[in-house]
Image 1 (spheres, rainbow, N blue to C red):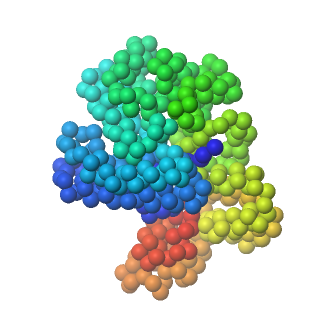
Image 2 (cartoon, rainbow, N blue to C red):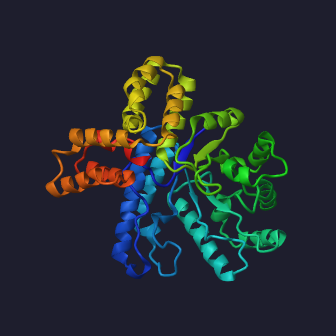
Image 3 (spheres, rainbow, N blue to C red):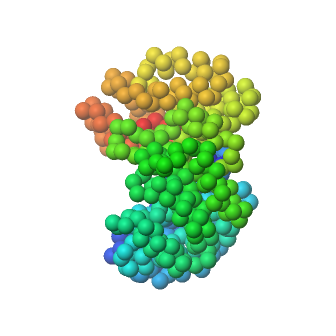
Length: 418
C-alpha cells in the first residue's frame, strides 16, 4: 500500500506549476518554466522518498499551455534527457505517479469545441507520462462530466468520444465518482462498458451515494475493473471541512478517521491518494502512523515523536501553552505514535488564542529572526505583530524570511501552514 498526496508539497520550497499569462508566451519563457518545473519535480520525489511517500500526483500545469493551440513546441524532444532521467528515478525507486485532468476537460460535453479541447488535454497528460517512459500503471484521473438534461445520452456521448483517444490515453484513463452527478455505481457501469478502471472517492460517495452503500461490496466491484497491467487499484481519501462549503476537503487528515477507514480496507491491496489541504504533512502523518503499527519498535517510534514534535510544537504553543510545556515528555515516554497524532489533531482543531499567538511569535522573533533580518524587514514584522493580528499575514512573512535567511529550524516547522 502506497500513500500519496497531490501536486504541491506544503513544506518544501519547490513547485511544478510555474507559468505565465498567454499573451507573454514565447520560447524562452516557456523553456525556463518547464526546465525549473522538471528540476523541482525531481527534488519533490527525492524528498517524498525520504519520508516513505511513494505515490504522487503530478500537476497538470507542469508544462504551461501544453494543449493550447499556441504551443507548437515539442517539449518532449527538447527535454527528453530530463524526462527520461525523472522516469528512471521513478521506476528505480518503485514510485507511482498519476495526473488528474482539470474540471474543464469534459469528454461528454455536447459542445464539439469542448470535446476537441478535452481530447487534446487528455492526450497531453498521456504524452507526459509516456515521455517519462512509464508503464500503464501510472494513471490519468478524470470525472465523467455533466448530465446535460439526459444522463443516459451524456454517458453514450462519453463512450463515443472515448474512442477518439489514442491507445496510451485509453490505457491510462481511470474514472472517478463525483459528489453531484455520477455516483460510483454510474462510474462502475461505464468503466465496465469501456473496459477501464474505476477509482473510488470516499468523500464524493458521502454526498452522492450509490443504491448499494456497503463499502466492501463497492471496493470489490472497483477492484474488479483493474486488470494486471493497470497495477494496484487506487482510491482517493479525504475528510470533510465542516466549516466550508459542502464537500470541501479538510485542512488535515484526522488520524482517527483515517485509521477507522484503513481498518475497513486493509485486507485489500490498494494505493491511497490523500486529497487534503496540508498535502505532504498529512501524508507523512498517515505513513508514520501505519509504520508504527507494523514496526512496534519503541526506539524508532520515540524518534518519530521527537522529530514530529519539533515540527508541530509552535502550533501547540499558540493554542494551549500549558499543554506545550507538558506534552512532549508524555508522548516521548509512551512511544505511541498514533496517540501522539490524535493529540495533535485535537490541538489543531482548537482556535489560536491571541495572547498565546503574541507570546509564541515574539519568542520566535527573538530566537530566530531579530538579528538576521534587515531594518526594513524588522520594521515590517514588528508593525504586523503590534497591530491588529492577522495570523496568516504574519506567518507568511516569517515563512519567507525563513527561506531567505535559511533558518533551518523554522524551514522544517509546520508553524506556517495552519
